[in-house]
Image (tube, rainbow, N blue to C red; front, side, top):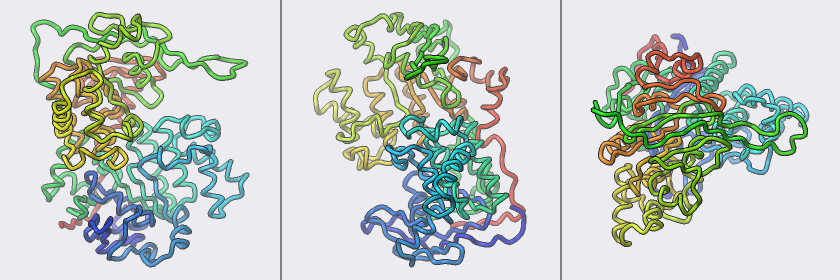
Length: 550
């Protein structure tokens, strides 16, 4: 960013926002210069997303700006009418929202949704916009962009959906891009590609970026300045290097200490030197999963999602499956839990071949294994409260009486750091991170022998993420549970896993003990994954080490 004076593109002074009279922002001062990357970090509920929505005029019903000024490119935003705000939004200020499932139109092809931005703002005709949409999808990192442009959102993975949102935001080449957790659902290599692209825009086009993230590793590498928020206030502001290497505020120090990419530490359940090797709890042997291609008249009639995958999960240990989106990790998880039938191969659990069991014979084993899904919003019953969701498996398997089940549910919710005030709320009234904590509590309700964790902490703040990982380690020590831990976050895997299995294109390319694999990866793909972990390389400090304490 250089040492020249930064000309403010966005200048917020004393911004106060409330929801139904309850304060959410309590006097925010924040500036973003032209071409500057500023990261806003903090836990859920700190006000990060509220500030972003205030800037683009998208506060939810009941939300209002109570005071302060918001100036963009010399224009006061708080006094603009709805039509003027809509003219700015998407053209001069763009927002990449946090949840692609909510933000994308489910009945419109993704290419048309990208093209719509260009058409609405008069930047291209419909024909030219369709062609430009394919190029924008390619820039956002989607493979086969011409094919993806013709697909609907539900036909794409969560990571691909989020890349579509990024393409929509970048379509009009805005002056300011507000990225609200833009890469939280992406694997590390695609995350690096997307963030590298944002860096390119910043340098070549003078586009400023307000990067809202709970990943301090991303903030350390990508931002020239970091703003730390908590409970609607700015706790600390300064250069990325100064904030992350010598934080002054206690809250900032706690965030930095919890960031897995910045402060690597092991969270295995205990230092263990067993006299005899632990028994194998789960054994996957030569798993294959083929999906038929509809209407295939020529060429291959199936796509192979899992290709001869074998691995073992010992009792009381954690085995991690890592790899990019589409590598076959989640499909493998469905195969080992018998939520999908393998085309070939078998799964042994506690010595029994699960693939040979019928539904009735399989039921007792269901109690011995649990699954934490990747998308908690889709996996939680919207009609139930958080406590009722956690109670459900206890009720289904007839564990305890009604009062005992309710007490057990609240105990589990407390252990995953969900405040008692939220226990009776339904999923729609919880944040993404809160919903994921409920999903983890539900999976632990029956104290299973194996928990399959499919991206269990990808949507959590670093401090809550650390709490959940510590909880998983403690439960493993207490109950001797095993984890099959699926993640694209290798910094998290380094903390929690005893053994790592690296997958690519449906197959296993490398496997080994965690320490050895991180220290001496043997495959180029594994080395690429490790090199992309945020926080392993720090962004150089700006010449001016200015800092503003609260």
